[in-house]
Image (tube, rainbow over all chains, first blue to last red; front, side, top):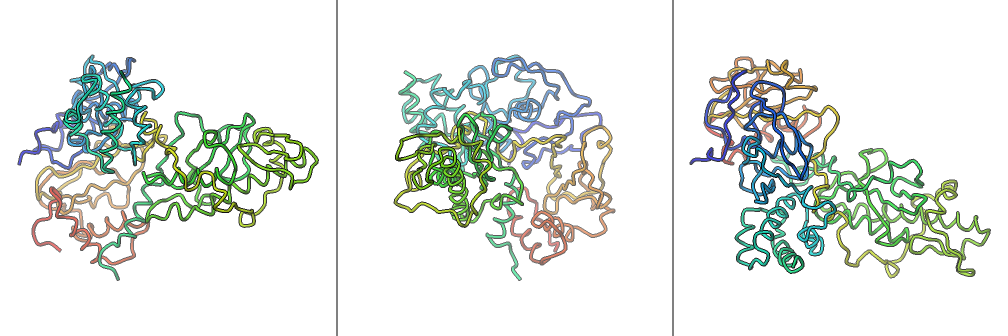
Length: 195
Length: 330
């Protein structure tokens, strides 16, 4: 079983990371203090383009974008679900493409444009957001930031997606409340209304 | 004695975790922070410019309880649906008795309290209006966020009455007259969820999003090797600024990982452990710690309950991948 493929091993050397073996699948967050954003060796200065603004962070290069957004920039709209790219709750846009922020390091982001749920529209008026309210999609709402970001990327790329294309695009976004039917209806609505 | 946690007990535990579940209104400054505000009771806030806000107690976990609570109160208060805002009530258990959710009891438990809270304020506003006009109270009627003097068709908005109503003594909650079901305007009728806007623009605050001053971000350090045991703990990082506030931290994963005995009772952050033979400083042994730590997680105070029961509960959970139940210990 190779479950460590998607994980970022800790590379902190001073103090050396105590975890030397293959990363455990349960290490959903980060394993080392350097990745927590605390001061220490291995830290670097990054200027991220988040929602049209330049945001400076000091982080270990291998810190996932998710934690840079949530813990360093205090933008908690993007949610942590599984940490291994399996659930889609942490989906953000990188240059308009939907990516899993838990699998994208700040180093890899570099100067590319990051859009989070907070920056999708200034007032909740994005067609997908409006459709989400019209269809009353969220139940608990935890996965919905990721669902909306995934759907928004789909609508941008494919303004009139077929049902099959919707299923295809949304298949990586899990909703524990099982709001899938409403999500699909909302995407269809958004596609109609954004004409 | 029960040998495993009942669902209801588990619910109670769950409830403890969600107390901080706070969803602010859709990007708005909570009305209750404004000092120029009429606070007739713990649940209603009215500003002079006729903004009306409900403080709801039950945390919203997706079942629509918050929306139901707003409906109950708005129905008795006689306001427009579009006029009413909501906020999560602060975590003050002495005032708010329903700050937890679980067991499908939220709406039921608040059915009377929320309606009584709304009715109490409505009665105060009616009295205030009658005094202001110098008319019979029975000729006054509350509707759509205003008091109407039926014979003369005079109207005063709740916001205009807020100041004078704050001097009116409140009727006791259990003595306020309540509406009959035939007069319900919101209860039992379809309505959009009040918390949806915050859930589509990222402003909704979930438990994991709560930030408090000086907050520590804890990381569970788990053994990277299957079946490994603790041999030592490294707390040197504590000095490097990793730990900023005294939080007890447990690094555990079934038998793979044990809390270090050296830190017992000191509330130290316990982060560095390596795989190898059992920690020599853990005098109590793994089984005992497993039971004890679990009890700490499920109850506020250790020392009560069935140790073997908890052990069995732990064991029942150790079938998950990576949880590392191996060998014949316990």
